[in-house]
Length: 490
Image (cartoon, rainbow, N blue to C red; front, side, top):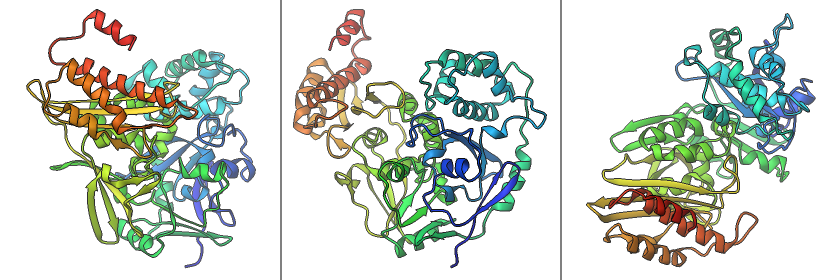
């Protein structure tokens, strides 16, 4: 098939693009080809937020989804069939500023100004997605939305003030119906095939199409949210000859609840996936908040994080401890296995040639189950874990009927703690039992020292997290004040 143009909606018209590299970033094209330079490059790895733009996409119900993402790691062909919004779109033709911009001016929220366009776009996405009836967002909601925007001038207080003040200004409405009509006209009936300089980019539109394509090209790189693969290009300068983009496969966006648990398709975005999981497991709320940044969660997928299998990926310990299974597909053949069996060695999984991750299945909570996840990192927001721990125990009265313990950052893969579980299973849920399990932890894990933590710190931290889990879930009595103080010194 001949190459097809990339088509997307920007600044009131449809743009058709050919002759560009398959891994050219949205940020590069916006600044260098469209000459819209309000969007900045700071880190080129999705950390600082200076490049934040808003992507509009047709949802399954015909409505429009508007999400703030990092333009620096999004590849240009992924814009096909979507709308791009940058800071240049906000000001009215009359010159009137949008309430987001006006509030930033009124609150003196811009200092050097380099990061300001990114803050504007994150706040604009929140403004568009929050109904007027919902009122002003809480400080925690604002902090979460702005978690991916860094200000080196330390100007966060006036920016937060502006995020609240913008709702006090006259409302600006956004015509979602008109945008939906524009995007509907851009939708393809078949797979996008884009080629430049012997580099291929395919965007299948159905699960069957993806299965056939993957079986024919088992060496191609599957691309989901680009939050990891994007850095292979911007930081490692890797040459990716063939990309198969799964973002247009509607079946992979599926999130559903069935008799066997919560099913999350491999293409479901992290924010959507966590919303579904937190509904059943509120204990995941803090991990959700600390899982990368809001724009990264708007682009990255839970399936991609699981398929990547990084030993410091934060989703896997919690999912493994809950007994999650992974669903794999090769053309029409589907198989399912426990998630912990999927990881064989560092960056090596049980996936076969021509196979891809279709989704994961998370069991429903059991009673009486105690479950927690914890993350140790140098920063609360947007930091890679030194240790990520997850604990799930089923109690029969005061006795541990079964325990599932998993850690990230402690081994070459996300890994269950067999010796820890053996020390817990069949034992009373008491201080002595937990101390024995803490002593067994070095049998399961011999972590490395690196820039994030030493081996000794990781071992001590992991043991203390297990003790914290006991203090939070013990059945004999609530925490007394001296126990809380004692834990602070553990």
